[in-house]
Length: 114
Picture 1 (cartoon, helix red, strand yellow):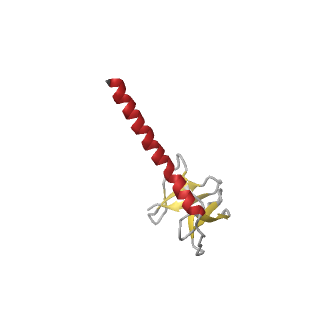
Picture 2 (picture 1 turned 60 degrees about the horizontal axis):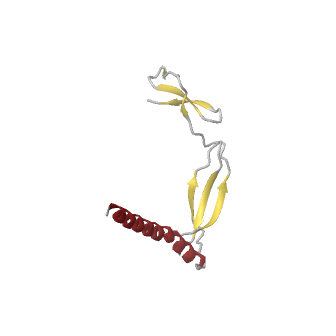
Picture 3 (picture 1 turned 90 degrees about the vertical axis):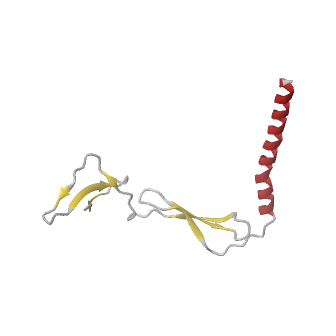
């Protein structure tokens, strides 16, 4: 009796998996039949930094497929600064506080933190 119920459960699970697996195939077949419409609007997927190129994508307004990918060149002025480990907060004569930060590219600067 236990073997029969286990077999039924496994059979139901296999049937569910086949249904779920067919969903992407249905979506891609609908996209294949789409005559893509691109309105020139892009979404930034990854912002360009000083060490990494960025990426923007344009999608079909009908089916949502990506119809255009454009690489955004590195931006030497777009640094991703992080606090320098072990750096101390410095106080200027006017009472403001400053701290050194550094980017992965090696650029280092002093920023006001308060």
